[in-house]
Length: 217
Ligand code: SAH
Image 1 (cartoon, rainbow, N blue to C red):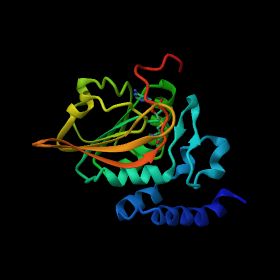
Image 2: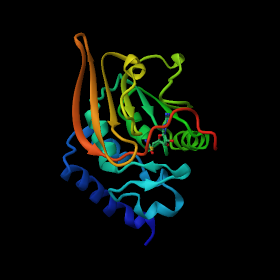
Image 3: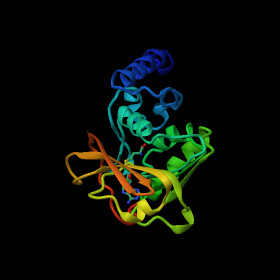
Image 4: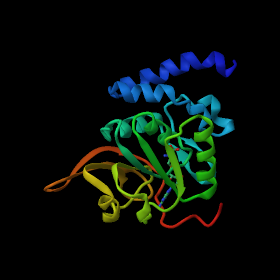
């Protein structure tokens, strides 16, 4: 069956799965509906683009499961004035979803080839408010400035203070925290005048965050 014929049914199922799993924010559901995931997966996996599963992308990385993308987006409590930092561009899919909901997205990727491909794809699809930078989430350049929201999409053993420092007052950061192999806990931090509040959310599985720019392409 052609992808054009498959799409409506599969996209309906995709929305139903997200709702059934508890995603209720209408703006998030709309963003998930609008961003064409088939354009972010590898050629050989187009058929599976609307299944609620993570899929392999280049450089041994993965595009996250749609439920996890929607859940993290919802838990970030976004407003359209926000400036958001993502660490771990991968395919650019999560950045595209974020870009539908906020003013500006800056996303950092340690693999040059992934960053380049993601930027080209995002530009081609018209996501003009996303900037992809080659960089290391463990040492974000000062020029990047401060952010209302930060989303980390690779597993960190702990959240670096340097990242929390990049948050504006009342800023929120969400990251998978735990060992590099196996599962992690999705942790949300909020910067308040009295300090940093931590909320542990759900169990997740992410590829590890590794320090430094990747030496391979
Ligand atoms: N958000 C992505 C999926 C993330 S997979 C998507 O929507 O497709 C995790 C990504 O984080 C990988 O591409 C990996 O190379 C990247 N990464 C790992 N450690 C990093 C670091 N220290 N800085 C920047 N990116 C990193």
